Amino acid sequence: MTASNPLADHYQRGLHADEVLAQIDAHYPAGPTLHQLAPLDQLHIGGVAASARLLNLLNPTTHRQVLDIGAGLGGLMRQGASLGFQLTGLDITHGFSALNRALSSRVKQLSTPPLTWVTGSASALPFADNSFDAVLFQHSLLNMPDATRVIAESRRVLRPGGQLVMHEVVSGPNVAQLRYPVPWAANSEHSHLLNLSELTRLLETGGFQLEHVDDWSEMALAWRQRQRQKEQTPRQAVLSPQWVFGDRFLTMGKNLVDNLAQGAIKVVEIKASC
Ligand SMILES: C[S@@+](CC[C@H](N)C(=O)[O-])C[C@H]1O[C@@H](n2cnc3c(N)ncnc32)[C@H](O)[C@@H]1O
Image (tube, rainbow, N blue to C red; front, side):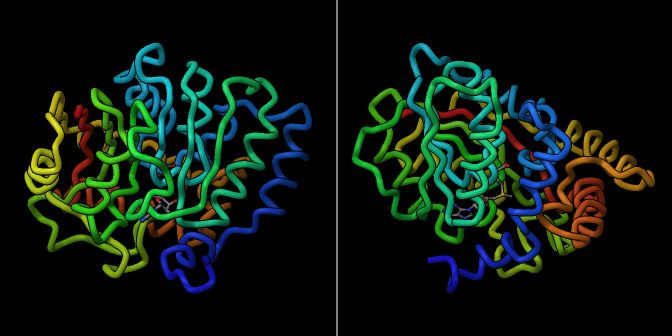
């Protein structure tokens, strides 16, 4: 499925899963913690703290069955499982789903609830109607050219009263100045940023009631600037986004800072219900 998928090629081009796992086994023989994995498996702006904030919008007692759409390497999934959510991770990049699963098996403190991994597309979710209490998007809608269909699919698999939660990149007022590459796209081909009004309108016309819309851009810029300083310090981190993107990440990381600082992109959080 992935051989003819150019988006998967973008994400898998620099990824050597065996080397990543060997690095983890060599440095964390008793199994890594979620924080130790975070530089590798939280492939979004804001890291573990952003995921904690996002998960805090949901209650595992009332919204336990959660679908993470575009789960990547699964940092959010494992963090959610540690809070009592039952997570299914869907991703179109099969190499990510496979490594996500392998990483989960190494995190020793992660026993329950169980996690599920599925390779598939957000445009045609391989799940029955009304099968989840909540769906999450974390820096994944930004890759999807057919947001209307993806939102309709999310609505279909959610039960009545279900929640949709997003931590997404949207276009800013100066989107014409957007610099590539960024982690989600080498060029404009795979970048499908909506602006915030377009996104909220699509959600409302797709049958969702907005409960919370927040602009995280300032926090995102401050976080990314701190990361950038670390990336420039000549010290070998055990894990980093370079294990996924290779040396391309040095330019990607710089471009993220510039794009946020210049208002080409914004980072937003949305909670909506159906
Ligand atoms: C920037 S990564 C973010 C991964 C993860 N959510 C995180 O924050 O660490 C975007 C992810 O969305 C996935 N993705 C993009 N388009 C998709 C689609 N149409 N269906 C399923 N997954 C998709 C990509 O394969 C990739 O793993």
